[in-house]
Image 1 (cartoon, rainbow, N blue to C red):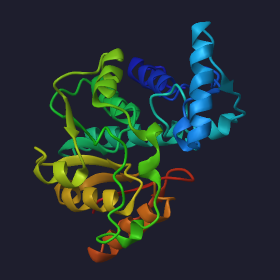
Image 2: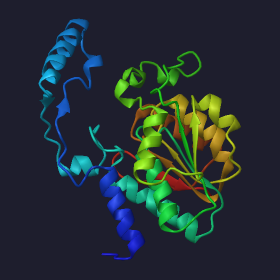
Image 3: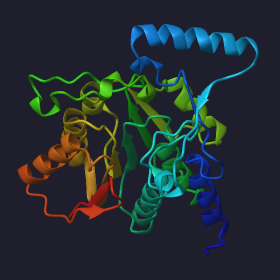
Length: 276
């Protein structure tokens, strides 16, 4: 076990951000109410309001295994990230490698949910006393865009945009950074759809880009606008490589630009490579 203060701090950050120090609570019945029929939504909302009068809340018990939680294959209720410990370990490896090897550039995550993975990037910089690199936090903060099926037929039928659970406001993400003491001038928010924000983002070079856009369009928008800015030996992390639409975007982009860098598996969901 590494007992250096910076590694103890980062280990605690990973466990805290992923809520691994506590049991996963049940799912409040109103959390996914938007997926119900109108009749059921009305009934559940009425029931919830009655319970709140008595300071009560109805929840659905969960039986997630530790492996599921560590692997980041659930949608957690209280965690600030859903990526799991292996993917947080990967972020730490990539950021620390970039620092050790003097790989030039800032860090970015495209698609941040509650901000946990981006917060951890900032934590790694803080643990090593780095003050000359920024963490870019790119998200619509309104969930995912509705598929543009005419331009990107690869996304036809995708339903991610319907999930209100994936929409977390910029104010909430800022508050999450602040509660860890990591909201400062080294954190830059890029609010909006990737196709609008990334082309003009104030980024010269990147040492690390972490893509978590789920769809073909979002993944391709990030690759087209950011990969040319990724430094030699910089890291490209793909959170959703197991998803068909995201994987196709990655495979198409790598084929188009003849990228031969080895794609390394992180866990059953994610992968990364180092730019040659």
